[in-house]
Image (cartoon, rainbow, N blue to C red; front, side, top):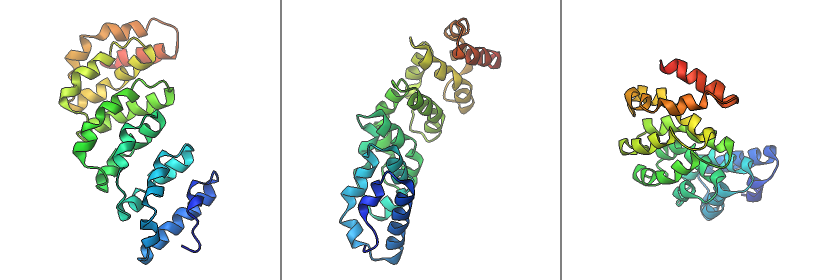
Length: 211
């Protein structure tokens, strides 16, 4: 650990962080990493760090978290901050792969993911909806969640509703929902196609695909 300064892992400079992570991996490969084990709490805190680049680097090194047997990562799935939460949910597949969080814990935390689908932040909303089909595929979103999804098809906010429709056909192909059920609510999509906006263009495109 002579060369490694742990604080470099939270440097605002990406190149400094990159070198620090490389050193962490080299130390682990050497087999002598008791000092790293003593700093598990520090590594876990990086997943909550305010600077996104620091968080992203940490999430991109989950194999290190596996090697250091870091616990408590599941709390990121239900964090108060949408920005912290979306980072966690975007890495659910890796959390399962490295067995860092049991699947049943992720499934029981999905109520927190649903909130991201109507996040105040447009970018987070977009990321969450893009992730939705993957969570269906992984069995995180359950068949019992269908009704909750259907509610989004008529959501009062057009900027939320349009995403539910955007991924509807993909969800039909997955067998999560039926085309018949979404066509029963088609008026809510048609409504979006009547207002001049970027949403109108998307709505018109989806309507043509549904026919």
